[in-house]
Image (cartoon, rainbow, N blue to C red; front, side, top):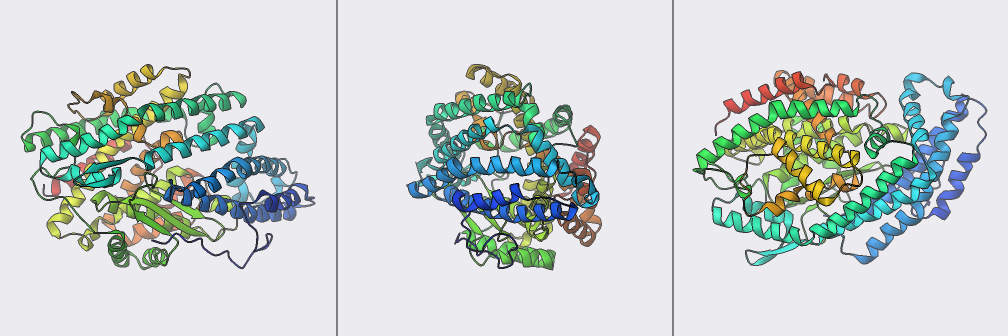
Length: 572
């Protein structure tokens, strides 16, 4: 599908319509005007914030377009060069002027005179940015971004020969759903062998990242990178200790549910123990769920879902179908994973994924659509920082769509298959929370133990897998178990951005339960909360959607009980 660059809006107040945001020579004079501007009154400060938002949007969209092109074509040398040129030459300058402007706003005597209801959340964030910024960290961040690009390039190049053709690793996932166990194992092993070839290269990248991040935290006078990153992610409403509480709650509540579920799976399959290639096959030997053939059909059917659910959501989804907003099929040279990226000047979303015709691709489609809805519902706020939200709530926007679309799976499946898909999704909720806890706990250990060896890291990973993982037989394939964490791209490019998925999953489950009482009211609350963007603190955003901001043991247990009850009502 087309990924053409969207047009720049005509209604610009501060920047010229011809501005090229990839060129520092064009950006610098405009940033210098803002930094040198004399602020005589609160209105002057307000105008500075708005003009800055417009300029930051232009620079941000330039970076977005370069990143999108790079992840869509990791094997294109010219695209890679343009992205790295921006990373090396423009992004460091943007970080420096951002600090200068943050400090100008935070230290302005007029800041206290601004409407607190309107600007309080923004000023709190700016104060935090000023506190943690260090000039000497800018080149370190550039090096980390370049290392993350190398990680994406390595993953994008991973191909295997199977079933008579060269295939990407996302395309190989469909073979794990086949009923022939020998074929499943063969497909799993060929992927495992391919990943093992790059284990050392990826470890080298990760070790380099760890060293740079430890230096960054030290430069900012933090005892460790974990505490630095929690502040950098602006986690005002919970602390690292709360993450440990979440880990414990998941271990006590979700892990036993998951393992009992896997014991039943093994018994139904007639196996004494499950192997890694036994987790996706239908236990009754039915053909794998195939909700669509090709990205165009997936988009068409998803559109029908939203037209049945809510006319406003349908209109927003259809607005992305005209070109420039979707790149969905898996192919060689494409980075792994999926994401939604809002281009803030044109205010248009972009969805990236690696569809291979699987049910999980449909889940990814509606997940990223939820992020796009969020971007579109708050796109008209003049303050750039409010055209997003804390990640813990941004993921509520996306995860809620995975659950809210369950009643409409008939657009993709017959009745029996739709029930299978619902079961698969809800069972996935039970299994994903332990994985989230495991990844987050792993990060805490990594950054609280700088200077650890790879052997110590592997030992800790295996201990956490015993604590949170499925009960699988790994005999003969232990090497891959030791390196499963390398598949989690957040560990590389977005450290500590993962527990948000767990917190958000609990919020999404609450919204899903509310929708079962009144879908209309639940969706209205969902849209109302999303339209606030990041203008309110995290607990208030949850409250606007009718949700509790809580991820302690009582909340986890009550929601898992509700999921279990729903699973009991669904046929196997």
